[in-house]
Image (cartoon, rainbow, N blue to C red):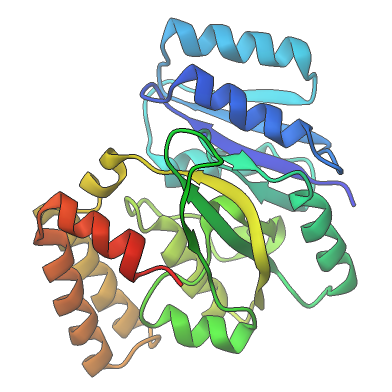
Length: 270
C-alpha cells in the first residue's frame, strides 16, 4: 500500500527533535513513499540546515513552504494538497514513531476497507523515549470511539492514518487551535466515516511543561466553550452533556499549570 506522511514544522521546533522524528519515519519495517513537510512560516537557520541534511539523506522528503505562519490546521490542509497518495499518515515534528507503526496500520486498512481513519495508543515521555510517564489509551471500535468522543478527544492525532479523500470531502482541518483534530473526527463521524484505534502504542509522544501551559488560560477556555456549543449545534452532544463538558473544562483550564499537568498525566490516562 503506497502512502504519504504529512508533517508540519514551525520556527519554535527544535532541530534535534525534527531529526529524531524524521529518522523514526524511515527506520520502519514499512517505509513511506513520500514525506510532505510543511514549513509553516519562516524557520530558523538551524531548522533549514537540518531539513536540507535530511533531504540529502532521504530523497522522499518534499517541502511545502508557507510565507506566513498559518497554524496547524491550515498548514496541514495545504500539505494534503501535495500528498500523492490516498493513504496519509500524520506525524508531529517532535514525536517518534515505533518501528512497526506503518506496517500495522496499512495492513489493517488493507484488510478493512470500511475503516477510514485509524490511530492507536501513544506512550508519553519526558526527555528520552525510554522515560515513559503515561500511556494515552483510546477506545477500540467505532461505536466506542463515538461514545468516548462526546466527553474527550477519542483519537491520538499524531498516530493517525487516514484516507485522504474522506478528509478532503468534509473540508479538511479547520483553524481551531489545539482542537482542529477533535473537530475533524466529529465531522468525519457525522459524515458516516468509520474510525478504529489499534490497541497498542504506535508512537512515542514528547511531553513538555509548555504543552500543559498551552492547554490553560482564558483564551483556550473560550475556544473550548465555542467548540462545545458547536458540538451541540451539529447534533453530536445533547445540551446537558454540552454544559457538563464546559464546566469540567473551565475548571481544568483555569487551574495552576502543575495541577493541570497532574490531572492530564495521572487522571486522564488509562
